[in-house]
Image (cartoon, rainbow, N blue to C red; front, side, top):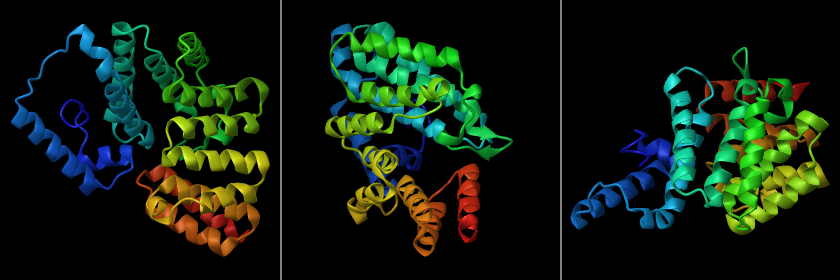
Length: 282
């Protein structure tokens, strides 16, 4: 779906699923061969087939949206179009399967993120979430996200996307409370790890722990992650650099910033990290 329908290349798909580009290329080749050898036709599935396919479709839609979301430099309008297409696709899933809570959870998740789009980049500069001006957030999008998440909750079938949306809902409350409930956020990430133990969830949990229980505890959570797993994961090194900087470990922070910068593709985020790195001597 991502390559054939939405036009993403193997490297972009690999980034979304946190695997090496060569690994993803091999998977794509094997998948195409399987489709060819089995004679699987390109056809619209019957209604009774939709539920069994939903999880894979939602994963692909989210990967497409994530790819567009990460490209915040604004140089290619196709990225914005891809985000809009992903939201349209998940709305279609809800239209076809209105009783599926995870589809509504994914729509809520993407709407919370889209609501902050204008605040992520100001005069070309990347602005991290906690430094964003909440007045630039789209309240209508946040309100719609809240409604979708509430509707999903009535099904009593908790899933990954609903939990991720709940995490973003907690961040959205900063527009009203001017603060983040880090203890609750850490608990939500613990729940997410139980349902979907991704590297992103572990790193984000460490960030929440650092805020809720102290920088050293957050750093300890990061250091407990397998070295081989995190060696090419940019968010890990960016967070580690920030925690080390706050703790006063300038040399170690510099090394972590260098690693994060080397793994960053987006120009705006790279410039942000370079600026943070340059401030270590202050």
